[in-house]
Structures are given as structure tokens and as C-alpha cells.
Image 1 (cartoon, rainbow, N blue to C red):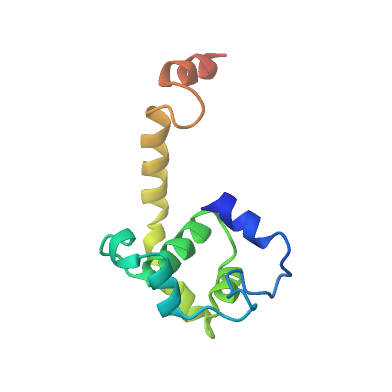
Image 2: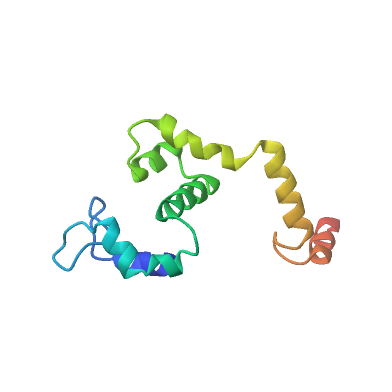
Length: 119
């Protein structure tokens, strides 16, 4: 999705709508669902699930919660904070990092990582 979003945002200003009608007006939810054939392509997901996933991914990549709040248009940071529970605890993060590290996802295979740690 990111390459598509980057291409769509090239001629846009920061406050502009990303997706608009041909006349530059705001798209309505029903038009998006119809155009995307959402009953088939959504595979049982709601359109709101995309928004939720985006918020969780931004927070996971250390985007400031205040920035995420602004992007989502939340009036209160408390609304944005609801997404934080998906981030887990520090222990969860450390455990996942360790699992990914031992599987070679942290830059090389486990044997390469072990060889580098011996240097």
C-alpha cells in the first residue's frame, strides 16, 4: 500500500484529502466500498479495521501518540491510547525481539549473528 499512498500524495499538501472524487470532493464511505468491491476484497473485515491497523503500526514504529491522534482526527488522546494495548508490555516486546533475533530476522541468519557476537 505504501507505494500507492506515496504516489497519490505527491501533489497533495499536508492538510489535503488523500483520496477524492474526480472533482476533488471528499469520497463517501459507500463509494469507496463499492469501488473497492469491499464485500469480496475485504474478506469479512470492516473498513475501520484498516484505520485500526494503521494506528497500531504507526505506534509500533514509535510515531508519537500525539501525531497519531492528529492523523486519526481524535479529539482526545485518550481515544488514541486505546490502541496502545496492542503494543504489549516491555517484556512482550523483548520476548518478540528475541524470537525474531533467533530466527534471523535481526540481520542475518542465527549463525551469522552468533559469529558476529564472538568478534
